Each structure stands twice: as C-alpha cells, then as structure tokens.
Image (tube, rainbow over all chains, first blue to last red; front, side, top):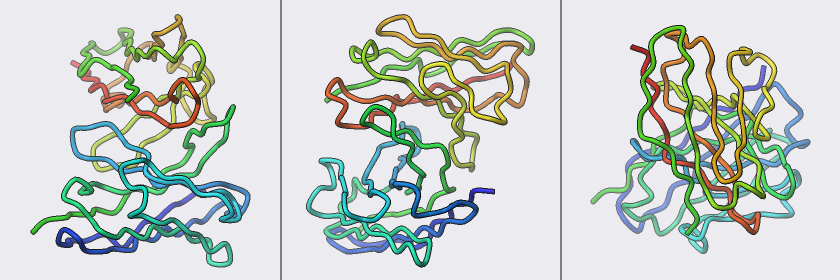
Length: 121
Length: 108
C-alpha cells in the first residue's frame, strides 16, 4: 500500500523558515518524481514544487520561486521542502504527492494527508 | 494566469446521475484529471486522461470531453460520493499544472 506521510508544519512568523518532510512507503521511491501541492481551505489545490526521480531537475510555482527549495533523499525514501522568507499567503495545508508524467506535465496518483503551515504575526 | 472553472456546487438525489463540469480554453489540447476529496482526507484520483479510471475506482465514475469543457459523470450516485471534486490540467503551453476551484457534490 502506497503511503505518504508529511511532517514539519507549524506556526511561523512572516519572514521565517520551515522545513517540511514527506516519508514514502509501499513503492520504489526512486522510480518516481514527487511534488508538493498546497491547499487553502475553500480553494482549489495549488502545485508548489516538483522534483524528478534523482533530484537532478526541480520546478517551482512563480509564487514561491526563489524562496522555496525542494530536495529528496532516496536512501531514506524522503522528500523535503525548505521554505524561507515565508509570507502570510503561504498559509496552507501542504501535501506531498507522487507524480505520473503524461505528455510533458504531471498528474498525481497518490497524495499524503498533509501538514499545516500557518504564517502569522 | 490560466484558470479552470468549476461550478461551486452540484446536488443530486441518491441513484441519480451527477455531472460536474470543468471549463478551460486549453482543454482541447490537454488531458484532464479528477480528484475526490472528503473532509479531513487526502485527495483521491478518480479519473485520469479525461476518461480513464484507476484501479479500485467504482465503474459509476466516468469522464467525457467536449472541447473546452470536460465532465465528470457519476452514475447512480451513492451517499458515500458526497465530497469535493477538483479537476486538474495544464496551461496551453503544457508548462504549469493547474487545478480548478472545486465542486461540492451534495447527495440529498
């Protein structure tokens, strides 16, 4: 059974930093690209960042480019999101999700439950 | 920026057919994917590549594509289908993943 379990969320002040983690199980982790997708209550999901199977290629939404970095440790079946210079508008539930590539983009066949990030003064 | 437009809510009685639409200019060139999300749970993929159903998803879930509007169809709706449904696709260049705003399906 595929499982994705996120951690690391919390309350942080604007300008602060957080590091999110996602531990994967039930599949061969380094066979897949992975993404972070966030949700604000009452709104649709927003893709934040993605990383290919070996970490050699990454992508970011314009809203987080230059502030967030993504990485993975295949030996630990883990995905990370380093979030710096956090803003109030980054407040959301952050999910990690397994990517399936189709014609140059991705869809997400498994998602974790998410970890909540709250940016507030 | 590119948007996918969904109705905010759809209501049907048990046993009826629910149709949830997703509209976007690029949908003639990009596949659409549908996710079901129940309160407090992770999203679950229910349709991929417009009309394909993942293993484990009931046959009552199907999808259709009519140009710039795609439709998630749930035939013989059951109480357990009450959830938020999101469509996902890409912008016209295929560069960015885009999600719709979600449709709340209520089973009366």
